[in-house]
Image (cartoon, rainbow over the protein chains, first blue to last red):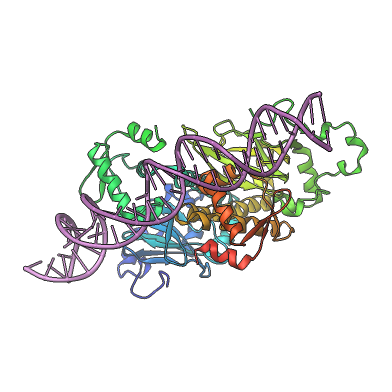
Length: 252
Length: 252
DNA sequence: CGGAGCTTTGATCTTCCTCAAAAACTGTGG
DNA sequence: CCACAGTTTTTGAGGAAGATCAAAGCTCCG
């Protein structure tokens, strides 16, 4: 079951007052997260082409978005909220392979079938593209193709960093690396490096770092005790000393 | 120090009898691993363009090829042998992020500086390209760009599978998954699914699977005892039952 | 106010790591 | 072809990080 399931999603275009809002005339050109997204390489005319094939969606927390092994009909761009990507083993063990935030693209590494599942972490907004539509557009716009390659290259680098984390870091190093990465990504989106918004559960963090919920919780407790971090209201975490955190992340 | 270091590498073009061998007239067109490589999408004329920018190298076992953080001047295509890619932590802990074999490309995920190091496992042959040369060619040939995106996409999928392995699998599952992956890749290169050639050391395998040398060795011993595998001459490993191995790899 | 789900804490257990030494293999020179 | 030095692999004993099992606190909502 994907996000097309009835009752789980809302399509912006269906909203009763869409025609009243001038922004809906050129949604892509006026998109607030465009300069974070793959489409920032397109000019206004090309953005209109994109408008013609895009559907805007909003999904609640914990809504399935794609399912591993299902036909890869749609690709997405995250415009708000957060998404987790994950793979499962037969007995239910789960590995979260990444979190996506505003501006991140979902579906780069795609065959004819999805090779992982995706679920929203909190309330999330997405641009949805039919894969065939977007592929056609990529074929006709070399800069889009270059952009995609660039994004794939970045994801690959992040994946390699995550392999180092999963294979060789301790629980404390893993958690510090995670917080630091969230901080750096927030900065890239134009947000503050601290405090950072950490909407995912302890279980999600554990499944991302190759730890159990309990170990994540205990490690958080230790970091609080050692005044490395401070938990704040509304899932915000303050990082007391980025340099120190960097050292902890590398095992120094 | 990279493969350009004196005494470490031999450049085929420099071999004294290069002009005597008709194959050197159109090396790329006559390349034996072309249908495994990125360049299989090029026609004969384009292969000549490629010939103009390629250098053929041979490196012995355990030769450094690229070093993390050095300027990314060259990209490579592996034509024979095996290469390991790895990242290091400050205290020497190492994570091997992948092994490359004939037909595999080295350098997809590249910024201006290398983001990982690479070293030959055994005697290895490579095509070397200056990054600027290859990028220019990619810019002028849309099918090359598409090919690169495809390869990046495949690597990303492998990376995600490896994250699942590193984060959530047991030692036995890790080793079975590793052997099975080697087998499947050998098949893709047109080799037999078993026995498979496993030239890397126990330490390398450990650093790839997030285990110690000792644990790898012990797990091998168990697999031999349980008649899952049989070690043969010359680093060959016979897989007794691929289906059974598949089950062990998934924890079934 | 009450209940479901999430987080934290505690006690115990297991897998894998570490340290150590023996065994097997590799390549080299005599 | 063999001896031997260096390296890699295997095996063993003991230890530690993190997993598991269990229960108590919190939080968020209806």
